[in-house]
Length: 172
Image (cartoon, rainbow, N blue to C red; front, side, top):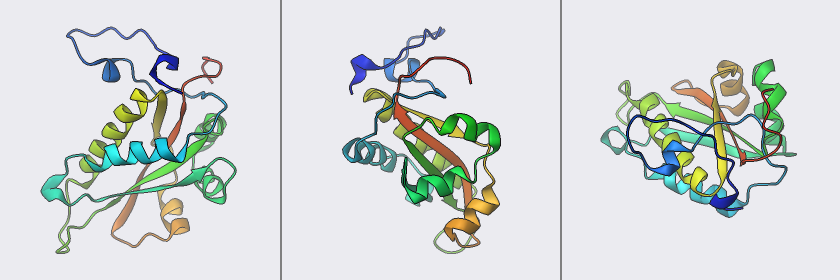
């Protein structure tokens, strides 16, 4: 799938901005087709190039969540009921996780911001390929952390869906 197949929403803006930002949005319905490993790798590569405080890159992405996989089901189990109702339409589920400590063990007050930078880069790259991502805060963060075995200094911060724009454009 490519950018020409991207479902666009009219988004008014006050000043000119690039189309990949202006037209990006977070749907709750996705086309019924898998996202290729190549496209996922490109999205993660864009995220990897995000700015981070002191270049610590404190983010981790649990991304084995391809629909039908054990990881997908495990991530789904940690979403709140409302998010489960629509996220099941997405071919990919991920968790965004941060290391809250710097390499020398001090508090990393910028880790959440840095994960946001990663995710923003990933979202813009994804949109350029006709792929949407939708971040969610409705997650049982503690149970996800325990299930995936993250150490104490890690924090599950968000869940993320990814899929090609499409499907019925209705509110769920």
